[in-house]
Length: 225
Image 1 (cartoon, helix red, strand yellow):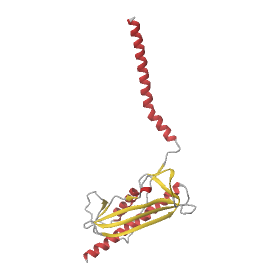
Image 2 (cartoon, one colour):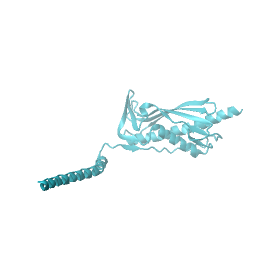
Image 3 (cartoon, rainbow, N blue to C red):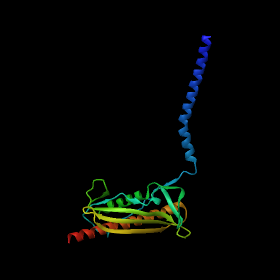
Image 4 (cartoon, rainbow, N blue to C red):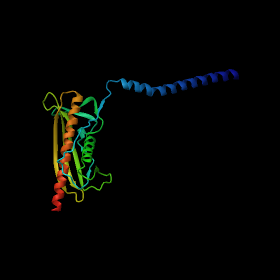
């Protein structure tokens, strides 16, 4: 009796071990299967990363002060990795199956930093909080970053940014201006809309950069007079 019971327990133990091994194998294969299914799904979004080619204007003034760009503020409806579209004035949607690689504020900040750095028009420009002893501080508020049909058959990439230049030492407002750029898309397809955003972002970046340098120089000159 004892021997039979022992064999029975051994058999049960063996089956438990086999079941455990089988579950472990399924668990190991599950991530691979998931990746395979994910790769074949049609609703996986296409991620877009606009790279505006912004050239510094030779007519921009050269200055002897340093600039810090504050963290860009973005209106809640467009502060997203989804690409916003406005089919009608009262309706806000997003493009299905498409998204941004960076949020609108990050795209604007990166583009502006790059053109100012490459321009050679000022000693230093950096994000606020990086340790640069800035003489001026640029505050940006992105109000709109959306594809807007505005009653037309094809949309325009609309970018609206309010820029405020502050004197870092006394916090006085040196200048403030709202930049609005509406760039028509070649068609309604998402890649065509993204191309319009890329062009519009380049235009807004160039306008803000030139305005910042000119405003800071005018303020500095007035202080020295």
